[in-house]
Image (cartoon, rainbow, N blue to C red; front, side, top):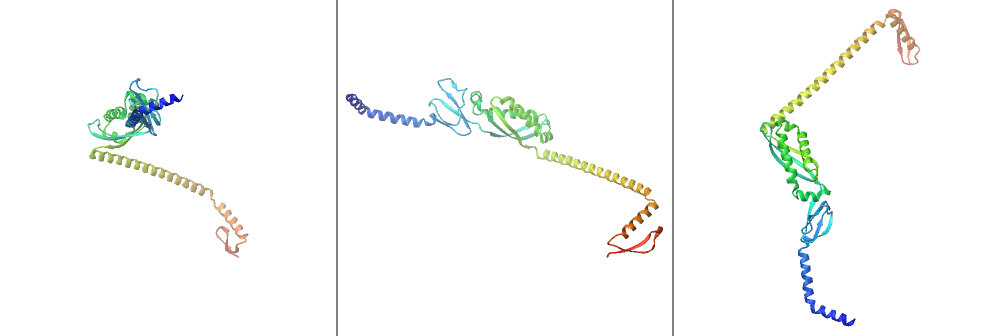
Amino acid sequence: MRDFWRKCRDRVRRHLPVLVVTTLLTLLLIIYLANSIFISVKPGEAGVLWLRFFGGTVIDRVYGEGMHFIFPWDRMYVYNVRIQEADREFDVLTKNGLQVRISISIRYYPEYALLAALHQKVGPDYANKIIVPTVEAVLREVVGRLDAEEVYTTNSLIVKSINEAIEQVARRFLNIDAVLITRVELPESVQNVIQYKIEQFHRAEAYQYILARETKEAERRRIEAEGLARYNQILSVTLTPDLLRYRGIQATEQLATSDNAKTVVVGAGKDGLPLILGGDR
């Protein structure tokens, strides 16, 4: 046994320079290829692996966050799977040939489970290959059916059409979170005319509101006046002289029996009612 270990030690000593050089070369090679071997997938990202010698893109697996080790001849494509935003401007023509510049903001994110299929079918630049061309085509089609004023005032119709078109094209790979029209830029003269028309329209609506309010107020006053006239008419019929004389007698009796008043009868008033002077105690 001692002879065996001695022989091994002698062989190591004889080949030590070769082992040292081989180890150093291996370490240098690993360091040089570290970026191709050690792949870090950061938060909000996911990876798609491409195998050079074993079938290309791995379709049935998406690599999540963390560190992954691959062969240097393979490659991992890292995608951002968070909600992303693309801002674009498009120059389109209305139905009467007027050029309009529309700024659009699109929020989207890739379907995580289908990321490998998206990479294989479309690639990393999927926003410019799917979303932007679809938006531009829909804008030209929809705006081409509208005049300048409709483009300025009916943004919801344009947004709805864009959403429907994008969902049909990209529904297998992408999720569209929102499509927003951030600005519609018309020639200044046309925009001033449209704004003036809108302002006059709202003024007319305000005038109609005021007119309706005053009409209702006049109707209320008419009904109130008719009620008062009816009340006075009934009152004049029911207040006979005898009833007034009776009410006067009742008031005299109440005043005479009051603890807070001193009553002096001076003489008879009209219709035989006494005149009463009262004073506090």
